[in-house]
Image (cartoon, rainbow, N blue to C red; front, side, top):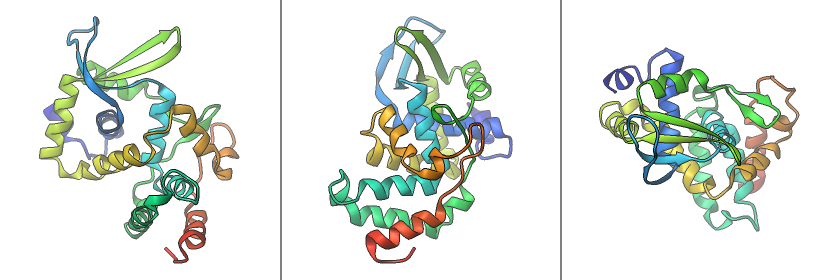
Length: 225
């Protein structure tokens, strides 16, 4: 656990990815102590029930401009976040003021079900340290991700000892609070509403939409970003 904290924001990609995966599970997963009959440590604190759901959350974490676009869609008249439009406006303005689309962008490729990145390497890193457990099931066909008690403690220790991960934590909280009511397929449909996302060739990097978000923000709020 100490090693993971020490290199949390380093240049080694698997460790950086591990921190992001832990934050997604901790802040966006279902909570509740679980006792499962496999592994050395049978206690789990958070879970995400499908790979589709996990990948869609991860995409919004890695593409701040697409996250902003989803918020703009959900605060349009008649949508679920319309009454929180002022808060959404401030969140999006801060995203662009902080240059997040440039600084925080971590590219993903488009596959048949949308944005996707193979997780085998980072999950091997996490499961070998018993921080995360992945369970495959056939009926129904799905992949579940569990944060172990040890993994939960690792995130909480990183929050105390590694202030650099605060951005990941706060962004995961925002994704969960503003878009967490969407099911996995609904998240996928929301992301596919972006023409640039939907039109990306298979296995190609999904492009950013900074300019489109700026234009929509101007149309929605009458103010430039």
